[in-house]
Length: 177
Image (tube, rainbow, N blue to C red; front, top):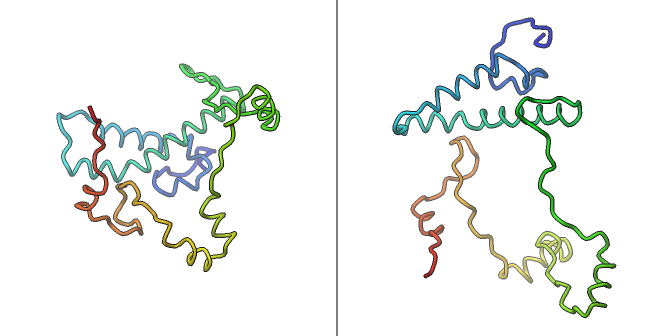
């Protein structure tokens, strides 16, 4: 119905299931209205305003990413030209074309320390040894460092961190002179 301009438009969480969600004017107007209201420029935001923004950010970010993906797809796959934008080649990482040929050429040139030897990943090690042997043999040699503190909605299933401990666990890194 949305593609045909029929029905009533009521933007909300259900828009995720609509095929027209990315191009929906009612949804765009709602998100832009929210953004304008939430990001007005008073001298300082109150805690209540920050809480309201925190609630809205995931949906606003998701919508912005959907628009970016849609526009990129239209430009790359359908030749759409967007005023003020262009398609460029993204960042890439150099790779060896043929590792065996690289090793041979480097060795022939007299370089010896061209290989690294490292342990297999924990998952591979556990699969190799089996869970019980893995725990018996390596259990005391493995640790899981605390994760970086992340702010999430109260409904998230993870337990809350003790913030006073977080202050001590995640000390600031200070440059030495």
